Image (cartoon, rainbow, N blue to C red):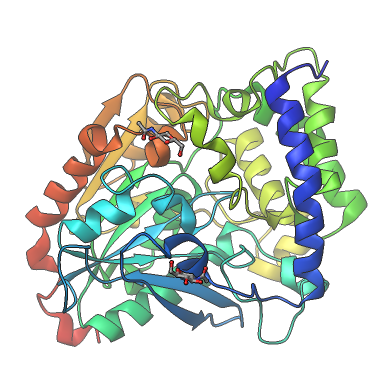
Length: 405
Ligand SMILES: *[C@@H]1O[C@H](CO)[C@@H](O)[C@H](O)[C@H]1NC(C)=O
Ligand SMILES: *[C@@H]1O[C@H](CO)[C@@H](O)[C@H](O)[C@H]1NC(C)=O
């Protein structure tokens, strides 16, 4: 039974917002205004919008906060790229107040902050030939985010700044990060990486909501609907949530907690503000890929079935991402949460075991999945640690960089 007031509120909002999304569809692919105007205007922080084209034709939105409020001119030295997770966009890094949000804190600490936006999120700018009504526009999973989106953004930043880049990923941002770090061309462009709620294996996920969706529904939806957008604000998104919440083993009393695990520390009175921007769309195929990982415990490319795999990969099974090939020279920092229903401690250990270089690790027993970006005390719990970690490896930004550019 769907009884929670939170869920009802969410659904009502979702219906209202569906209208807005439909308008977005009509006006083409582009928001009238970018994230700088819509989210950062009025904060006092400088913000510049860039568009980066991927090798497969997607036009990504990339924002730069080149310095903090105090500093009146000149860009800071060390570039950091912030990569959001599933159903999120770059706004997640600046939704709380300065002194709470990682995007603002890094800018105030002297970093040159770049905010990534995956293909097909609200702050990206479509595709050079597909419209959002074309199949090709939604024919991707995080494989493509790792193969095209992240390298394109890193190349742009390295070329613009002449420096290697620090990386921060959250959730799906750690999946595509770890997958991408197996490519030497990518790690050559990185100074160090901090992974919040690190994920590569997903078979111990403790969210009943997600498990249930992964085991019973997602593939069926892909089969009946084909390659499509998945938008939690749309009719289909709301229907999926209803289906899943009607199952006996799923308690949707607090929907967010049902999905992410209980979050200790985000600001509940700020939810209406968060919902002005979140959640963002993803592709149904991407959800199907994540569901494959949950069911099988693999960290590999999308499984098309025997015939499709032969066509795509010249092998019957999809290729693995081999975490042991991530170079030991790349400094890593990780933080995981005791209440995180998506990055389960068992899966996190599985990831770490395979890495050549053991990361610095912070464990926060009270943290759920969303706390890593929205906790009001994340500065003390996490972000000060990230700043110190990056400063300790700042020499890697410029060393031998001429060979990379
Ligand atoms: C940005 O803020 C200024 C001053 O507060 C305002 O005049 C302007 O309309 C805002 N721009 C947008 C896009 O909201
Ligand atoms: C929580 O959010 C509300 C609404 O934006 C804000 O007024 C309040 O100051 C926030 N509290 C903290 C501790 O940030």
